[in-house]
Length: 306
Image (cartoon, rainbow, N blue to C red; front, top):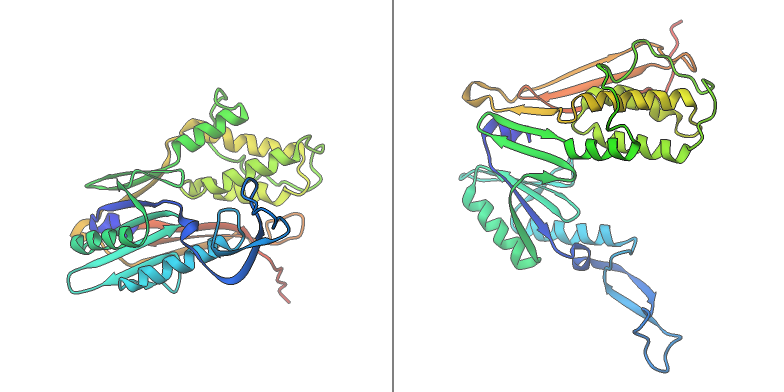
């Protein structure tokens, strides 16, 4: 997204129909005869699968293996850093492709190459051209000449409706300053499953809301046995989201004056946890002045100074 915004490249979206059915199985897999299709006199026999099916554990791996082979036949190369990203560079221009199961996004400067890639995919799989990218995996994409804006407004509103916080009073911060939660604070929460489900949904929301990354990392530490104080911290995050559900990330088109340098920033609170004295580390990475990666995580180890 940052590269597409900086270079003002178009974003194309494709959908592959019945993706898992295209996967080739590399191992022998047997299955029971499906209900309604039992061979007469041979009900004790099983079927040997030659293609992957939905519901089969091997299907995602089989499908992605088949997709990788086909896309590399076109001349695309697989990224060594992210196997879901493929690229092609030629004298004409550059093509980038990212795939998540059956959702494909293509961008680049080679318009003819992109059209040829679409035709190639259509010839090998049954694809549907969804036009310019507008909505991808719950993320709303708005593109203009000045850049690209990503948000999860509908996702947030659905989350607030589900939790009954749509009419809650908004607050200005996702967590009270200097909050120190521990595993023994408050009474046990009545519905731990709801707590875990909500934390998981908030974790996905950090894709476009880096400002809640730290408080979400804190409440994630108590999923095993949540308490009422931990739930109150979750409600604080929801009230913060209620204040501006359309908040997101802006990838700016810097034009010819911009740069594509990679800049990284990190910090730690130095033994900030009262429970085990471990530090919480936060970092963010910018490409061409646009935020592309961030995280807030409690460190796995504890160091001592002698």
